[in-house]
Amino acid sequence: MKEKLETFLDETMANIGYMLGKPEVVYPKEAGHADYMSSTALAIAKQYGKTPREIAEAIVAKMREQLPPYISEVEVAGPGFINFKLAREYFTGIVDFITKDAENYGKSDIFEGKKVIVEYTQPNPFKPFHIGHLMSNAIGESIARLVHFHGGDVVRANYQGDIGPHVATAIYGIIKRGKGIVGTTTSEKAFYIGECYVYGNAHCEADPTVKAEIEKINKKLYEGDPEYKTLYDEGRAITLEAFEALYSVLGTKFDRYFFESEFATKGIAIVREYEAKGIFEESEGAVIFRAERYNPKLHTRVFLTNNGLPLYDAKEIALTVAKFTEIHPELSIVTTAVEQKDYMAVVTEAIRQMFTVEKYADHMEHITHGMMRFATGKMSSRRGNVITGESLIRDAKEAILDVIVDRGFNDAEKKEVAEAVGVAAIKYSILRSGIGTDIIFDFDKSISFDGDSGPYIQYTATRARAVCRKATEAGIQASLDIPTNSTLAIEQVLERFPLAAERAIKNREPHHIASYITELAGAFNSFYAKEQIVVVGDETSAYKVAVTQATATILEQGLYLLGIKVPEKM
Image (cartoon, rainbow, N blue to C red):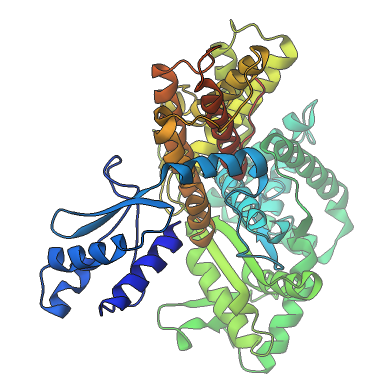
Protein backbone atom coordinates (compact mmCIF):
# COMPACT_ATOMS: atom_id res chain seq x y z
CA MET A 1 0.00 0.00 0.00
CA LYS A 2 2.84 2.40 0.79
CA GLU A 3 4.18 1.96 -2.74
CA LYS A 4 0.71 2.38 -4.25
CA LEU A 5 0.16 5.63 -2.40
CA GLU A 6 3.59 6.94 -3.34
CA THR A 7 2.93 6.15 -7.01
CA PHE A 8 -0.50 7.82 -6.87
CA LEU A 9 0.98 10.90 -5.20
CA ASP A 10 3.87 11.04 -7.69
CA GLU A 11 1.51 10.83 -10.70
CA THR A 12 -0.81 13.47 -9.27
CA MET A 13 2.06 15.88 -8.62
CA ALA A 14 3.39 15.38 -12.14
CA ASN A 15 -0.05 16.15 -13.57
CA ILE A 16 -0.08 19.58 -11.95
CA GLY A 17 3.57 20.36 -12.53
CA TYR A 18 5.23 19.53 -9.22
CA MET A 19 8.36 17.42 -9.47
CA LEU A 20 10.38 15.96 -6.59
CA GLY A 21 11.64 12.54 -7.53
CA LYS A 22 9.70 9.86 -5.72
CA PRO A 23 7.63 11.35 -2.87
CA GLU A 24 7.56 9.53 0.44
CA VAL A 25 4.48 8.27 2.25
CA VAL A 26 4.81 7.14 5.87
CA TYR A 27 2.74 6.03 8.81
CA PRO A 28 1.67 8.92 11.07
CA LYS A 29 3.37 9.06 14.46
CA GLU A 30 0.00 9.20 16.20
CA ALA A 31 -2.71 6.72 15.32
CA GLY A 32 -6.25 7.84 14.56
CA HIS A 33 -5.66 10.85 12.31
CA ALA A 34 -4.84 8.92 9.17
CA ASP A 35 -3.61 5.57 7.90
CA TYR A 36 -0.75 7.15 5.94
CA MET A 37 0.62 10.65 5.51
CA SER A 38 3.09 12.61 3.41
CA SER A 39 5.09 15.79 4.08
CA THR A 40 5.96 16.22 0.40
CA ALA A 41 4.33 19.65 0.17
CA LEU A 42 6.57 20.94 2.93
CA ALA A 43 9.63 19.61 1.12
CA ILE A 44 8.95 21.40 -2.20
CA ALA A 45 7.23 24.62 -1.04
CA LYS A 46 10.36 26.79 -1.14
CA GLN A 47 11.28 25.42 -4.56
CA TYR A 48 7.96 26.60 -6.02
CA GLY A 49 7.60 29.83 -4.02
CA LYS A 50 4.33 28.81 -2.38
CA THR A 51 3.21 27.85 1.11
CA PRO A 52 3.16 24.14 1.87
CA ARG A 53 -0.57 24.28 2.49
CA GLU A 54 -1.23 25.84 -0.93
CA ILE A 55 0.68 23.04 -2.62
CA ALA A 56 -0.96 20.34 -0.48
CA GLU A 57 -4.46 21.69 -1.23
CA ALA A 58 -3.74 21.66 -4.96
CA ILE A 59 -2.50 18.08 -4.80
CA VAL A 60 -5.45 16.91 -2.71
CA ALA A 61 -7.97 18.64 -5.01
CA LYS A 62 -6.48 16.83 -7.99
CA MET A 63 -6.49 13.50 -6.17
CA ARG A 64 -10.16 13.83 -5.24
CA GLU A 65 -11.09 14.02 -8.92
CA GLN A 66 -10.46 10.28 -9.21
CA LEU A 67 -9.67 8.53 -5.96
CA PRO A 68 -8.64 4.87 -6.26
CA PRO A 69 -11.08 2.45 -4.58
CA TYR A 70 -8.64 1.66 -1.77
CA ILE A 71 -8.67 5.30 -0.55
CA SER A 72 -11.75 6.55 1.29
CA GLU A 73 -10.48 10.08 1.91
CA VAL A 74 -7.49 12.34 1.38
CA GLU A 75 -7.17 15.66 3.19
CA VAL A 76 -4.79 18.44 4.16
CA ALA A 77 -3.71 18.69 7.77
CA GLY A 78 -1.70 21.26 9.71
CA PRO A 79 0.78 23.37 7.74
CA GLY A 80 0.60 21.14 4.67
CA PHE A 81 0.60 17.43 5.49
CA ILE A 82 -1.40 15.16 3.18
CA ASN A 83 -3.35 12.51 5.09
CA PHE A 84 -4.71 9.33 3.52
CA LYS A 85 -7.54 7.26 4.95
CA LEU A 86 -7.99 3.81 3.46
CA ALA A 87 -11.30 2.23 2.56
CA ARG A 88 -12.99 -0.17 4.97
CA GLU A 89 -13.08 -2.78 2.22
CA TYR A 90 -9.31 -2.62 1.91
CA PHE A 91 -8.79 -3.68 5.54
CA THR A 92 -11.36 -6.43 5.17
CA GLY A 93 -9.37 -7.63 2.18
CA ILE A 94 -6.24 -7.80 4.34
CA VAL A 95 -8.02 -10.03 6.86
CA ASP A 96 -9.33 -12.15 4.00
CA PHE A 97 -5.83 -12.60 2.57
CA ILE A 98 -4.35 -13.56 5.94
CA THR A 99 -7.04 -16.12 6.75
CA LYS A 100 -6.81 -17.71 3.31
CA ASP A 101 -3.08 -17.45 2.48
CA ALA A 102 -1.32 -16.57 5.72
CA GLU A 103 1.90 -18.29 4.69
CA ASN A 104 2.52 -15.73 1.94
CA TYR A 105 1.33 -12.56 3.64
CA GLY A 106 4.25 -10.17 3.95
CA LYS A 107 6.66 -12.20 1.82
CA SER A 108 8.68 -10.67 -0.99
CA ASP A 109 11.13 -11.74 -3.67
CA ILE A 110 14.08 -9.72 -2.32
CA PHE A 111 16.25 -12.86 -2.18
CA GLU A 112 14.37 -14.95 -4.74
CA GLY A 113 16.72 -17.44 -6.39
CA LYS A 114 19.69 -16.37 -4.26
CA LYS A 115 21.77 -18.56 -2.00
CA VAL A 116 22.77 -16.83 1.24
CA ILE A 117 25.13 -18.11 3.92
CA VAL A 118 24.35 -16.81 7.38
CA GLU A 119 27.18 -17.54 9.81
CA TYR A 120 26.42 -17.08 13.50
CA THR A 121 26.82 -18.27 17.09
CA GLN A 122 30.52 -19.29 16.72
CA PRO A 123 31.21 -20.73 20.20
CA ASN A 124 34.69 -22.08 20.80
CA PRO A 125 35.17 -25.66 22.01
CA PHE A 126 37.03 -25.76 25.35
CA LYS A 127 35.41 -22.45 26.40
CA PRO A 128 31.99 -21.66 27.90
CA PHE A 129 29.00 -20.89 25.68
CA HIS A 130 28.50 -17.36 26.97
CA ILE A 131 25.96 -14.58 26.60
CA GLY A 132 27.62 -13.24 23.46
CA HIS A 133 27.01 -16.57 21.75
CA LEU A 134 23.35 -16.37 22.77
CA MET A 135 23.14 -12.92 21.20
CA SER A 136 24.81 -14.03 17.99
CA ASN A 137 22.55 -17.08 17.83
CA ALA A 138 19.33 -15.11 18.34
CA ILE A 139 20.28 -12.46 15.78
CA GLY A 140 21.72 -14.87 13.22
CA GLU A 141 18.79 -17.27 13.42
CA SER A 142 16.31 -14.43 12.99
CA ILE A 143 18.19 -13.02 9.99
CA ALA A 144 18.36 -16.51 8.46
CA ARG A 145 14.58 -16.87 8.84
CA LEU A 146 13.99 -13.42 7.38
CA VAL A 147 16.17 -14.22 4.35
CA HIS A 148 14.22 -17.44 3.78
CA PHE A 149 10.91 -15.60 4.30
CA HIS A 150 11.91 -13.23 1.51
CA GLY A 151 12.71 -15.98 -0.95
CA GLY A 152 16.33 -16.85 -0.18
CA ASP A 153 17.97 -20.27 -0.11
CA VAL A 154 19.62 -20.12 3.32
CA VAL A 155 22.69 -22.04 4.45
CA ARG A 156 23.10 -21.75 8.21
CA ALA A 157 26.79 -21.92 9.09
CA ASN A 158 28.70 -22.11 12.35
CA TYR A 159 32.44 -21.39 12.49
CA GLN A 160 34.04 -22.69 15.68
CA GLY A 161 37.52 -22.22 17.08
CA ASP A 162 38.71 -25.72 17.88
CA ILE A 163 42.40 -24.82 17.71
CA GLY A 164 44.47 -21.98 19.08
CA PRO A 165 45.72 -20.54 22.39
CA HIS A 166 42.38 -20.94 24.18
CA VAL A 167 42.44 -24.70 23.53
CA ALA A 168 46.01 -24.96 24.79
CA THR A 169 45.01 -22.92 27.86
CA ALA A 170 42.12 -25.27 28.70
CA ILE A 171 44.24 -28.37 28.17
CA TYR A 172 46.95 -26.90 30.41
CA GLY A 173 44.29 -26.35 33.10
CA ILE A 174 42.96 -29.90 32.78
CA ILE A 175 46.45 -31.37 33.09
CA LYS A 176 47.50 -29.21 36.03
CA ARG A 177 44.34 -29.84 37.99
CA GLY A 178 45.17 -33.51 37.59
CA LYS A 179 41.72 -35.06 37.55
CA GLY A 180 41.11 -35.50 33.86
CA ILE A 181 37.74 -34.21 32.60
CA VAL A 182 35.42 -34.33 35.61
CA GLY A 183 31.64 -34.71 35.47
CA THR A 184 28.80 -37.18 35.03
CA THR A 185 26.78 -35.52 32.27
CA THR A 186 27.99 -33.85 29.10
CA SER A 187 26.89 -30.52 30.52
CA GLU A 188 28.88 -31.02 33.73
CA LYS A 189 31.97 -32.08 31.79
CA ALA A 190 31.72 -29.09 29.45
CA PHE A 191 31.38 -26.79 32.46
CA TYR A 192 34.49 -28.31 34.03
CA ILE A 193 36.46 -27.78 30.83
CA GLY A 194 35.40 -24.13 30.93
CA GLU A 195 36.62 -23.90 34.52
CA CYS A 196 39.97 -25.35 33.45
CA TYR A 197 40.24 -22.70 30.75
CA VAL A 198 39.68 -19.98 33.35
CA TYR A 199 42.23 -21.67 35.65
CA GLY A 200 44.81 -21.85 32.88
CA ASN A 201 44.27 -18.27 31.79
CA ALA A 202 44.63 -16.92 35.32
CA HIS A 203 47.97 -18.69 35.76
CA CYS A 204 49.13 -17.66 32.28
CA GLU A 205 48.63 -13.98 33.08
CA ALA A 206 50.39 -14.30 36.44
CA ASP A 207 53.38 -16.45 35.47
CA PRO A 208 55.54 -16.09 32.31
CA THR A 209 56.69 -19.71 32.59
CA VAL A 210 53.07 -20.88 32.40
CA LYS A 211 52.57 -18.68 29.36
CA ALA A 212 55.57 -20.30 27.70
CA GLU A 213 54.23 -23.78 28.52
CA ILE A 214 50.83 -22.95 27.03
CA GLU A 215 52.50 -21.61 23.89
CA LYS A 216 54.41 -24.88 23.63
CA ILE A 217 51.15 -26.88 23.94
CA ASN A 218 49.56 -24.65 21.31
CA LYS A 219 52.40 -25.29 18.85
CA LYS A 220 52.22 -29.04 19.40
CA LEU A 221 48.45 -29.00 18.81
CA TYR A 222 48.96 -27.26 15.46
CA GLU A 223 51.62 -29.81 14.56
CA GLY A 224 49.31 -32.72 15.44
CA ASP A 225 51.62 -34.00 18.15
CA PRO A 226 50.09 -37.22 19.60
CA GLU A 227 51.02 -36.19 23.16
CA TYR A 228 47.78 -34.24 23.58
CA LYS A 229 45.57 -35.92 20.97
CA THR A 230 43.46 -38.09 23.33
CA LEU A 231 42.72 -35.22 25.69
CA TYR A 232 42.09 -32.83 22.79
CA ASP A 233 39.69 -35.21 21.03
CA GLU A 234 37.78 -35.91 24.25
CA GLY A 235 37.43 -32.22 25.20
CA ARG A 236 36.44 -31.20 21.69
CA ALA A 237 33.76 -33.90 21.46
CA ILE A 238 32.31 -33.05 24.87
CA THR A 239 32.01 -29.32 24.27
CA LEU A 240 30.59 -29.75 20.76
CA GLU A 241 27.97 -32.16 22.11
CA ALA A 242 27.05 -29.65 24.83
CA PHE A 243 26.68 -26.94 22.18
CA GLU A 244 24.34 -29.17 20.15
CA ALA A 245 22.06 -29.58 23.15
CA LEU A 246 21.83 -25.79 23.42
CA TYR A 247 21.15 -25.38 19.68
CA SER A 248 18.22 -27.78 20.04
CA VAL A 249 16.76 -25.72 22.89
CA LEU A 250 17.30 -22.49 20.93
CA GLY A 251 15.60 -23.85 17.82
CA THR A 252 18.63 -23.72 15.53
CA LYS A 253 19.79 -26.44 13.17
CA PHE A 254 22.97 -25.68 11.28
CA ASP A 255 23.53 -26.85 7.71
CA ARG A 256 27.28 -26.49 7.74
CA TYR A 257 29.96 -26.51 10.42
CA PHE A 258 33.37 -24.99 9.84
CA PHE A 259 36.29 -25.40 12.25
CA GLU A 260 39.46 -23.37 12.61
CA SER A 261 41.54 -26.55 12.58
CA GLU A 262 40.45 -27.10 8.96
CA PHE A 263 41.87 -23.75 7.89
CA ALA A 264 45.16 -23.43 9.75
CA THR A 265 47.35 -24.99 7.06
CA LYS A 266 45.21 -23.55 4.25
CA GLY A 267 45.42 -20.09 5.78
CA ILE A 268 49.21 -20.26 5.97
CA ALA A 269 49.45 -21.33 2.32
CA ILE A 270 47.15 -18.56 1.09
CA VAL A 271 48.94 -15.85 3.04
CA ARG A 272 52.32 -17.08 1.81
CA GLU A 273 51.04 -17.11 -1.78
CA TYR A 274 49.86 -13.52 -1.59
CA GLU A 275 52.93 -12.44 0.36
CA ALA A 276 54.86 -13.33 -2.77
CA LYS A 277 52.44 -11.12 -4.74
CA GLY A 278 53.04 -8.14 -2.46
CA ILE A 279 49.73 -8.09 -0.57
CA PHE A 280 51.34 -9.17 2.68
CA GLU A 281 54.82 -8.42 3.96
CA GLU A 282 57.23 -9.66 6.58
CA SER A 283 57.84 -7.63 9.72
CA GLU A 284 60.07 -8.80 12.58
CA GLY A 285 59.56 -12.40 11.49
CA ALA A 286 55.76 -12.15 11.33
CA VAL A 287 53.63 -11.69 8.21
CA ILE A 288 51.40 -8.60 8.28
CA PHE A 289 48.84 -6.77 6.17
CA ARG A 290 49.02 -2.97 6.12
CA ALA A 291 45.34 -2.23 5.56
CA GLU A 292 45.78 1.54 6.00
CA ARG A 293 47.53 1.60 2.62
CA TYR A 294 44.16 0.93 1.02
CA ASN A 295 41.86 2.58 3.57
CA PRO A 296 43.19 5.18 6.03
CA LYS A 297 40.51 4.20 8.57
CA LEU A 298 41.98 0.71 8.92
CA HIS A 299 45.09 -0.59 10.65
CA THR A 300 47.91 -3.12 10.33
CA ARG A 301 47.29 -6.65 11.54
CA VAL A 302 49.45 -9.76 11.94
CA PHE A 303 48.26 -12.76 9.92
CA LEU A 304 51.14 -15.18 10.66
CA THR A 305 53.14 -15.06 13.90
CA ASN A 306 56.95 -15.00 13.96
CA ASN A 307 56.93 -18.76 14.59
CA GLY A 308 54.81 -19.35 11.50
CA LEU A 309 51.45 -20.02 13.16
CA PRO A 310 48.26 -18.56 11.64
CA LEU A 311 46.17 -16.09 13.63
CA TYR A 312 42.39 -15.78 13.24
CA ASP A 313 42.92 -13.43 10.31
CA ALA A 314 44.69 -16.00 8.12
CA LYS A 315 42.16 -18.69 8.94
CA GLU A 316 39.31 -16.28 8.20
CA ILE A 317 40.64 -15.84 4.66
CA ALA A 318 40.77 -19.62 4.14
CA LEU A 319 37.23 -19.89 5.51
CA THR A 320 36.02 -17.25 3.05
CA VAL A 321 37.57 -19.09 0.13
CA ALA A 322 35.91 -22.34 1.26
CA LYS A 323 32.50 -20.67 1.52
CA PHE A 324 32.60 -19.20 -1.96
CA THR A 325 34.21 -22.15 -3.73
CA GLU A 326 32.22 -24.91 -2.02
CA ILE A 327 28.79 -23.32 -1.46
CA HIS A 328 28.78 -20.57 -4.12
CA PRO A 329 26.58 -18.03 -2.30
CA GLU A 330 25.40 -14.73 -3.73
CA LEU A 331 25.85 -13.30 -0.24
CA SER A 332 27.74 -14.29 2.91
CA ILE A 333 26.48 -12.70 6.14
CA VAL A 334 28.49 -13.02 9.35
CA THR A 335 27.24 -11.92 12.77
CA THR A 336 29.70 -11.21 15.57
CA ALA A 337 30.10 -8.94 18.58
CA VAL A 338 31.00 -5.33 17.84
CA GLU A 339 34.48 -6.01 19.22
CA GLN A 340 35.21 -7.87 15.99
CA LYS A 341 34.26 -4.95 13.74
CA ASP A 342 37.74 -3.53 13.15
CA TYR A 343 39.28 -6.99 12.83
CA MET A 344 36.71 -8.05 10.22
CA ALA A 345 37.14 -4.78 8.31
CA VAL A 346 40.87 -5.45 7.91
CA VAL A 347 40.31 -9.06 6.85
CA THR A 348 37.68 -7.95 4.34
CA GLU A 349 40.09 -5.39 2.88
CA ALA A 350 42.76 -8.08 2.55
CA ILE A 351 40.25 -10.28 0.73
CA ARG A 352 39.34 -7.36 -1.53
CA GLN A 353 42.97 -6.83 -2.50
CA MET A 354 43.69 -10.55 -2.91
CA PHE A 355 40.68 -11.72 -4.87
CA THR A 356 40.18 -8.93 -7.37
CA VAL A 357 38.79 -11.26 -10.03
CA GLU A 358 36.44 -13.28 -7.80
CA LYS A 359 35.28 -10.12 -5.96
CA TYR A 360 34.43 -12.07 -2.80
CA ALA A 361 34.48 -8.90 -0.71
CA ASP A 362 31.58 -7.44 -2.72
CA HIS A 363 29.40 -10.33 -1.57
CA MET A 364 30.21 -10.17 2.13
CA GLU A 365 28.34 -8.50 4.99
CA HIS A 366 29.44 -8.22 8.59
CA ILE A 367 26.72 -7.54 11.15
CA THR A 368 27.84 -6.58 14.64
CA HIS A 369 25.82 -6.66 17.83
CA GLY A 370 26.38 -4.87 21.12
CA MET A 371 27.01 -6.46 24.48
CA MET A 372 24.54 -7.85 27.00
CA ARG A 373 25.19 -6.28 30.37
CA PHE A 374 24.00 -7.06 33.86
CA ALA A 375 24.41 -5.12 37.07
CA THR A 376 28.00 -6.42 37.35
CA GLY A 377 28.92 -4.97 33.95
CA LYS A 378 30.57 -6.65 30.98
CA MET A 379 31.52 -10.28 31.55
CA SER A 380 34.56 -12.18 30.33
CA SER A 381 35.13 -15.91 29.90
CA ARG A 382 38.84 -15.28 30.59
CA ARG A 383 38.16 -13.99 34.09
CA GLY A 384 35.59 -16.59 35.01
CA ASN A 385 32.85 -14.14 35.99
CA VAL A 386 30.78 -15.19 33.02
CA ILE A 387 27.12 -16.19 33.11
CA THR A 388 26.90 -19.01 30.60
CA GLY A 389 24.13 -19.24 28.04
CA GLU A 390 23.05 -22.54 29.53
CA SER A 391 22.75 -21.11 33.04
CA LEU A 392 20.72 -18.11 31.84
CA ILE A 393 18.31 -20.36 29.95
CA ARG A 394 18.03 -22.65 32.98
CA ASP A 395 17.29 -19.72 35.31
CA ALA A 396 14.62 -18.40 32.92
CA LYS A 397 12.98 -21.84 32.70
CA GLU A 398 12.93 -22.22 36.47
CA ALA A 399 11.41 -18.76 36.90
CA ILE A 400 8.67 -19.58 34.37
CA LEU A 401 7.94 -22.86 36.19
CA ASP A 402 7.25 -20.84 39.34
CA VAL A 403 4.80 -18.64 37.44
CA ILE A 404 2.83 -21.46 35.80
CA VAL A 405 2.83 -23.87 38.75
CA ASP A 406 -0.92 -23.49 39.36
CA ARG A 407 -2.15 -23.36 35.76
CA GLY A 408 -3.21 -26.98 35.45
CA PHE A 409 -0.36 -28.30 33.31
CA ASN A 410 0.92 -31.86 33.60
CA ASP A 411 4.65 -32.38 34.04
CA ALA A 412 5.37 -32.74 30.31
CA GLU A 413 3.38 -29.60 29.51
CA LYS A 414 5.17 -27.66 32.25
CA LYS A 415 8.53 -28.60 30.80
CA GLU A 416 7.50 -27.68 27.26
CA VAL A 417 5.97 -24.35 28.26
CA ALA A 418 8.84 -23.39 30.58
CA GLU A 419 11.42 -24.07 27.89
CA ALA A 420 9.55 -22.25 25.12
CA VAL A 421 8.73 -19.24 27.30
CA GLY A 422 12.17 -19.11 28.94
CA VAL A 423 13.91 -19.04 25.57
CA ALA A 424 11.40 -16.45 24.31
CA ALA A 425 12.17 -14.22 27.28
CA ILE A 426 15.87 -14.18 26.43
CA LYS A 427 15.58 -13.99 22.64
CA TYR A 428 13.02 -11.20 22.70
CA SER A 429 15.16 -9.19 25.13
CA ILE A 430 18.01 -9.47 22.62
CA LEU A 431 15.98 -8.76 19.48
CA ARG A 432 13.70 -5.97 20.71
CA SER A 433 16.55 -3.44 20.50
CA GLY A 434 18.60 -2.34 17.53
CA ILE A 435 21.36 -4.86 16.82
CA GLY A 436 24.23 -2.45 17.33
CA THR A 437 23.15 -1.31 20.80
CA ASP A 438 24.15 -2.76 24.16
CA ILE A 439 21.43 -4.50 26.14
CA ILE A 440 20.79 -4.13 29.84
CA PHE A 441 19.18 -7.46 30.60
CA ASP A 442 16.41 -7.12 33.17
CA PHE A 443 15.57 -10.66 34.21
CA ASP A 444 12.22 -9.88 35.90
CA LYS A 445 10.94 -7.81 32.97
CA SER A 446 12.08 -10.41 30.46
CA ILE A 447 9.91 -13.16 31.99
CA SER A 448 6.88 -10.95 32.62
CA PHE A 449 3.59 -11.88 31.01
CA ASP A 450 2.68 -8.19 30.82
CA GLY A 451 4.16 -5.47 28.67
CA ASP A 452 7.05 -5.49 26.25
CA SER A 453 8.31 -9.07 26.56
CA GLY A 454 8.48 -12.34 24.67
CA PRO A 455 6.15 -14.16 27.10
CA TYR A 456 3.57 -11.36 26.74
CA ILE A 457 3.41 -11.80 22.98
CA GLN A 458 3.38 -15.60 23.25
CA TYR A 459 0.53 -15.34 25.75
CA THR A 460 -1.42 -13.02 23.43
CA ALA A 461 -1.03 -15.48 20.55
CA THR A 462 -2.22 -18.42 22.66
CA ARG A 463 -5.10 -16.31 23.98
CA ALA A 464 -6.20 -15.48 20.43
CA ARG A 465 -6.02 -19.16 19.44
CA ALA A 466 -8.06 -20.09 22.53
CA VAL A 467 -10.75 -17.60 21.47
CA CYS A 468 -10.88 -19.22 18.03
CA ARG A 469 -11.29 -22.67 19.60
CA LYS A 470 -14.05 -21.35 21.83
CA ALA A 471 -15.81 -19.92 18.77
CA THR A 472 -15.65 -23.27 16.99
CA GLU A 473 -17.11 -25.00 20.05
CA ALA A 474 -19.93 -22.43 20.03
CA GLY A 475 -20.62 -23.08 16.34
CA ILE A 476 -19.36 -19.68 15.19
CA GLN A 477 -17.23 -19.81 12.05
CA ALA A 478 -15.00 -16.96 10.96
CA SER A 479 -16.67 -14.85 8.28
CA LEU A 480 -16.09 -11.48 6.61
CA ASP A 481 -19.71 -10.93 5.59
CA ILE A 482 -20.55 -8.36 8.27
CA PRO A 483 -17.56 -6.18 9.19
CA THR A 484 -17.45 -4.18 12.39
CA ASN A 485 -15.43 -1.06 13.07
CA SER A 486 -14.66 -2.31 16.58
CA THR A 487 -11.81 -4.35 15.05
CA LEU A 488 -10.47 -1.59 12.81
CA ALA A 489 -7.57 -0.65 15.09
CA ILE A 490 -6.30 -4.25 14.90
CA GLU A 491 -6.78 -4.41 11.14
CA GLN A 492 -4.79 -1.21 10.68
CA VAL A 493 -1.86 -2.86 12.46
CA LEU A 494 -2.28 -6.10 10.52
CA GLU A 495 -1.92 -4.09 7.32
CA ARG A 496 1.57 -2.99 8.37
CA PHE A 497 3.15 -6.44 8.69
CA PRO A 498 4.60 -6.58 5.14
CA LEU A 499 6.38 -3.26 5.65
CA ALA A 500 7.79 -4.38 9.02
CA ALA A 501 9.05 -7.60 7.46
CA GLU A 502 10.61 -5.68 4.56
CA ARG A 503 12.35 -3.21 6.85
CA ALA A 504 13.64 -6.03 9.03
CA ILE A 505 15.41 -7.79 6.17
CA LYS A 506 16.56 -4.72 4.21
CA ASN A 507 18.10 -3.17 7.31
CA ARG A 508 19.14 -6.55 8.79
CA GLU A 509 17.29 -5.45 11.94
CA PRO A 510 14.91 -8.01 13.51
CA HIS A 511 13.78 -5.38 16.03
CA HIS A 512 11.34 -4.09 13.39
CA ILE A 513 9.49 -7.40 13.75
CA ALA A 514 9.70 -7.29 17.55
CA SER A 515 8.30 -3.75 17.67
CA TYR A 516 5.56 -4.66 15.22
CA ILE A 517 4.25 -7.72 17.04
CA THR A 518 4.34 -5.81 20.33
CA GLU A 519 2.09 -3.19 18.76
CA LEU A 520 -0.21 -5.87 17.33
CA ALA A 521 -0.44 -7.67 20.68
CA GLY A 522 -1.30 -4.38 22.36
CA ALA A 523 -4.04 -3.61 19.84
CA PHE A 524 -5.57 -7.05 20.25
CA ASN A 525 -5.45 -7.01 24.06
CA SER A 526 -7.11 -3.57 24.14
CA PHE A 527 -9.86 -4.96 21.93
CA TYR A 528 -10.13 -8.13 24.00
CA ALA A 529 -10.56 -6.10 27.20
CA LYS A 530 -13.45 -4.08 25.76
CA GLU A 531 -15.31 -6.51 23.51
CA GLN A 532 -16.95 -9.90 23.77
CA ILE A 533 -15.75 -11.80 20.76
CA VAL A 534 -17.67 -15.08 20.94
CA VAL A 535 -21.34 -14.20 21.31
CA VAL A 536 -23.96 -16.55 19.90
CA GLY A 537 -26.55 -14.49 18.04
CA ASP A 538 -24.29 -11.46 17.52
CA GLU A 539 -24.08 -10.92 13.76
CA THR A 540 -20.61 -9.30 14.05
CA SER A 541 -19.10 -12.11 16.12
CA ALA A 542 -18.01 -14.09 13.04
CA TYR A 543 -16.04 -11.09 11.79
CA LYS A 544 -14.42 -10.57 15.18
CA VAL A 545 -13.38 -14.22 15.13
CA ALA A 546 -11.86 -13.78 11.67
CA VAL A 547 -9.82 -10.81 12.88
CA THR A 548 -8.79 -12.78 15.97
CA GLN A 549 -7.67 -15.67 13.77
CA ALA A 550 -5.67 -13.30 11.56
CA THR A 551 -4.08 -11.73 14.65
CA ALA A 552 -2.99 -15.10 16.04
CA THR A 553 -1.54 -16.04 12.65
CA ILE A 554 0.55 -12.89 12.28
CA LEU A 555 1.72 -12.97 15.91
CA GLU A 556 2.88 -16.54 15.36
CA GLN A 557 4.54 -15.59 12.07
CA GLY A 558 6.31 -12.66 13.69
CA LEU A 559 7.49 -14.78 16.62
CA TYR A 560 8.71 -17.44 14.20
CA LEU A 561 10.81 -14.83 12.39
CA LEU A 562 12.39 -14.04 15.76
CA GLY A 563 13.11 -17.72 16.33
CA ILE A 564 10.47 -18.04 19.06
CA LYS A 565 8.02 -20.92 19.48
CA VAL A 566 4.41 -20.48 20.59
CA PRO A 567 3.14 -23.11 23.08
CA GLU A 568 -0.31 -24.59 22.54
CA LYS A 569 -1.42 -23.08 25.84
CA MET A 570 0.03 -20.91 28.56
